[in-house]
Image (cartoon, rainbow, N blue to C red):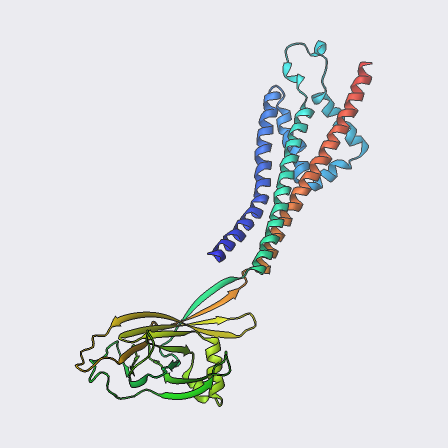
Length: 399
């Protein structure tokens, strides 16, 4: 889920930076439309100004070349343009205009300046959004580097590497061990009596890895392999008597019985297994059915660790023997749960190419907004200078 959220956040940042470009273009179009409508209302008796709206107001904002060309005309051309604008934008006294045209009280230059200021603030807002997206993108990238996401994959197999099952029976004795298929266990014949041992077993003595003083005796049995045929291993133990209140047999699972057979130092191998794997118990008087699943974990240094997960079910054994039942019988079954090996590894979802693409889009929008803001400021300064020049000309004319 965290991986999906981070992907959605990256897509949202990309959509935002692309939207910055679209917002600027759309706003320019709609603002041009509404300003022309306003100019038409103010100048409804002088329609020539509407045709000049795009040429005078928005072409300098959208095309820098036109702006540069308009800033460097010859003195004669600028004088003619100023004279032409004087006739349409100079505010004359009411005594000369009379009361027939009250709409000329509004200055066209003032109206253009108001809309330019609004446009400038919107561009500044777009720039602030772009800066925020840059900060958010870099922050997300650093967080993804610090917190990798856990990835879980499953690999289907038909045959497992036979696991090793190490029993610590103590005073108990192995009576029988058989391989069965398709979850079928035939009825017991002479329970409590020695039977056939058809499993591959190995007995080993080694010192306790935690105390280094106590000797431990282990009976290692080869586990099931064929998961498609639902192979299982059924074992029966017998304990004649015990001085403890509860009777149980310890066991542990390790990944490969073949590695144990091929190991030259089997005692050291078992000490390492006991240090690395957990141990479990099954009780007397019950049939304990253990279903195993294998989990492999890949570490950052490239090493791989193996862990067993178990699901156990316990069924009571109905002892029908006529003799004294002071002894205990232990029954245990081992089977693979499913044909899937689970692999767990940490992955870093931070992709530098995605971040570079996002930053390129954001900086493109940022520079575009800055360019628009620069043109707007230049245009306002130019309009202000022309307005002051016209005002001085009008004052000289009146005087």
